[in-house]
Amino acid sequence: MELKEYLHTTYTDSGQQRPIRINKINRDYLPELLAKFNMTKGAEIGVAKGKYSEMMFKKIPNLELLCVDMWEVEEDKANQSKGQSYVDYTYENTKRRLAPFKARIIRGKSMDVVRNIPYESLDFVYIDANHEFDFVMSDIIEWSKRVKKGGLVAGHDYIKTRYFGVIEVVNTYTRAHGIYDVFLTKERSPSWFFCK
Ligand SMILES: C[S@@+](CC[C@H](N)C(=O)[O-])C[C@H]1O[C@@H](n2cnc3c(N)ncnc32)[C@H](O)[C@@H]1O
Image (cartoon, rainbow, N blue to C red; front, side):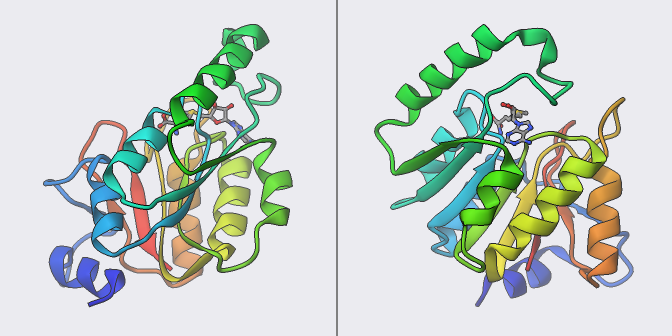
């Protein structure tokens, strides 16, 4: 069974509201799901300290992960208060944290990096960079193209706060593309995901 069919048969019911909140799972479960379907080529967009990347490496055997982050305070309102020297320090620590794994760390802006990634070359993408509407929309449009048909497109923070446009982007994008099975994890800051 493919992942798309698995998610549909396991978690959907006719008449459910979309997106479907799955009460049994949190975002730590996503790597387990990816491992179960042998999805070993992925990208995390927005890596910061690399903690989620590290967790994915520990749960997905033979994972090759593109770890994309600009590690720059410019542009990102959520990061501006931290200061550039703290972000530089985070970058160095992240490189050390991910050194034991097959991480391809790329320091750059998501939209610059994505141009060099071939279409349909990834099994999954996890989008967790700038959470403002325009950025999330660009990320979901461009990074989805890099995911194979049947692969997983996911991201973090399906919540409404001051600058965030994640809910609007995920709802608008999936509606426009006729994607009906959209799922959320159960946390206060849920992850969202769907199969391409
Ligand atoms: C919420 S943090 C990522 C957290 C990480 N995914 C985790 O779960 O541990 C967001 C990161 O996105 C990065 N970022 C923001 N805008 C970006 C952009 N346009 N391109 C690349 N990285 C970006 C920031 O530098 C920041 O480190």
